[in-house]
Image (cartoon, rainbow, N blue to C red; front, side, top):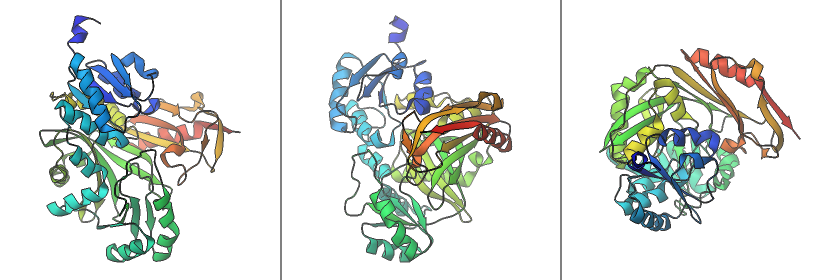
Length: 415
């Protein structure tokens, strides 16, 4: 390693995620930072971007990871800690706390991960959001729905990616769908509230958006705004997003003030957030706020649309540095996710007819591997995705047309 590379800040990254969805972040970060990875297995595709790695028994145990980070810090000064995996951001906060770095506030991150606590903080600040009641039993859920009104939404209080979320329009539908939410599980071993593990919420309607922001010393700067495409009703599967660098909502004073007030209410001071709102007739209402980069390739859409690099911005914020937020282009981008048609489909192959893909496509990426058994929502949710494609253009319509072509070019062989 050269002396110049030794002078680069050292960023500790906790886990990486699936290569198709997160490689672009490591690629960018490695150009300006040294990266040490905490992972549960020896690095594979990540190796080319790393200066070091530590294999741990798990990356859920924040206190154990904090001890490992302190040992690392004895030989190499860690300048920042970064995690973009929802299930591990709370554990990561313990690491940052032990090192005295930005983002070291486990109680605040827990307030975000536990949507019931988020609702309490928002209510205390008098900020707009759906009415929400924590419940455990069917009887409690039925009573809560009478309070918030029908239609209502059932959701686990600590999951991401709309996993376990379902709309109910009546008491009969609530009875039918209650077990879906109650029985939905994730690999995340964290228990949020065993007494009241679910939320029954008012179903607010309108267009749903997400905003990825960088936050430094409590000041929120929105970077990318994505307009969400939801499918498979009554479930809330996120099947696509569109990002417009010139979206007028980014300059909307009401939305910007609401965004800042939301972060102040939950106490988020430093890092990257992914915040979701429903644009109702009464104004924006908070759906959730997450202390990490957005999923679903949204930060990559933002990079293609604006030129502002999410990996470098998030890494700089984690290290207490001022990131470069200067846009270098103004485009529209979109992503669409593809699913198997039937439950329990065994994948033989997933590919795209390259001759049928239009120039506006940035990529068309198979995700499901041969032998994988996948299902569409509601059983499949995020893990039911078999491929995705991303388009770049001058309008949402142009991107949509290119994504339609990609969908037509998708070839799935099942066994």
